[in-house]
Image 1 (spheres, protein in one colour):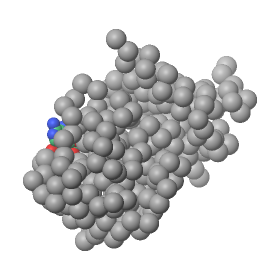
Image 2 (cartoon, helix red, strand yellow):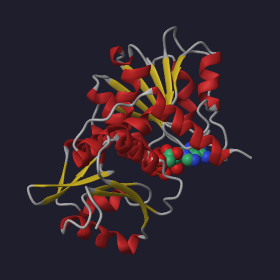
Image 3 (cartoon, helix red, strand yellow):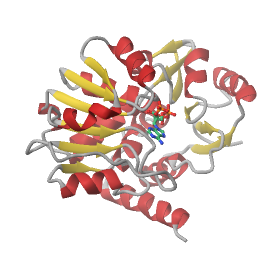
Image 4 (spheres, protein in one colour):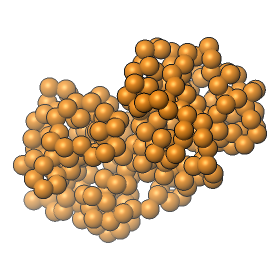
Length: 281
Ligand code: ATR
């Protein structure tokens, strides 16, 4: 019989997930009992996994691609962030109900709080991309007090749908306008998969950026994406996306295992070493 809470990360595929490394590092660091396992689940098995949380066979779990929207549809209740974003990445039981939470917006904000001084002082943001990750980033920016969030996306209809979801502060626009919007932005965020290892680079004219503009990327392989390299070269202050991954794990860990964990340099270094091991050669 296993001792302590049993928690999963469910995805398909799930082998690439760094969540087991992160949660097991914290369990060891704090000397807590518990188990965290990667579970590869196909779409037609996902509801059965949630049923196993309801019966207590699992304490809870993280949800990753491609199940975040299915989790949203299948849980009994949403936390405020999940309701706003329309996707669930964290599951737990509360008062006999299966709760679906979304910690991606928290992860985005907590990473910048730790590493990008002054990011909460901005008024206008430029967000590249309009997928699921973009919804979490837009939610975090609005929550931090941004008054205008320009969203540019290859497929214009998705940027428009995102604006409809979040209201008048979110302003959709085409890629062709991105260079001009750079001049209006206090912070620029890439939420597309462009620049990820194996994907084409994101190229954007940053020459009109104002002094003091910030830039960050949700891609963290490589840590310094072509977008962040170009932003640094153009004089912007940058922050990589690895901390979003690390910080999004904290609320779930606290909920399941009973202690709020630190995102420290040692954790960051161990995840970087693991990423380098996987992506080397
Ligand atoms: P996620 O949940 O990680 O955000 P997603 O919902 O598939 O994943 O969204 C991926 C984002 O990257 C979208 O904004 C997508 O643009 P489209 O909506 O036009 O598909 C963007 N993206 C992916 N590949 C791209 C490419 N080659 N050029 C431009 N944008 C791209």
